[in-house]
Length: 214
Picture 1 (tube, helix red, strand yellow):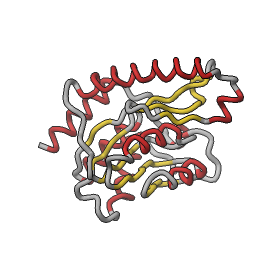
Picture 2: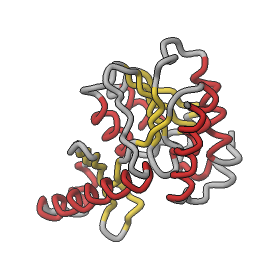
Picture 3: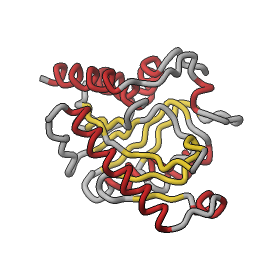
């Protein structure tokens, strides 16, 4: 299955989630930026509130698309030890990368929410949405951030590698993935339009979602 774009993928994901019990009072948390158009459609179709959960990938030096791991605002850091060893990343270098990304997380949260407070998920079910799972490191950081407070954690993506989805089943209460292709190289190969989501689009969709909830 090839999705037209992220919003098309979000509608397909919403259909997969609709039959799940116990999500009437859930909150949808989308990982910016690409997860937000997907999460918007899930929230709209299921009539649930939408917020962002900003998690930053730690890119390998010179190969930023290759994830060494990921970091969340709460301090949770997920590291792919094998890749860190392959690139001979010293602890001091890793600490500097983590500090830099935490600053970026704070900046983006303020930018996306426009001064609004983040949604309180304490004691609630959280549906954590992204546009796909490759290594799963970013999603792991997100889930581990929420684990102490959320009553139930559902990872929801339109497409993902089988390995990443299986690993996330050990982290979340449920994993919903519309498709897990046998041959998987990159998330973008399952979208006809995989253009980068802009900061402006993220803000616009959050405002629209907030208006729908009022």
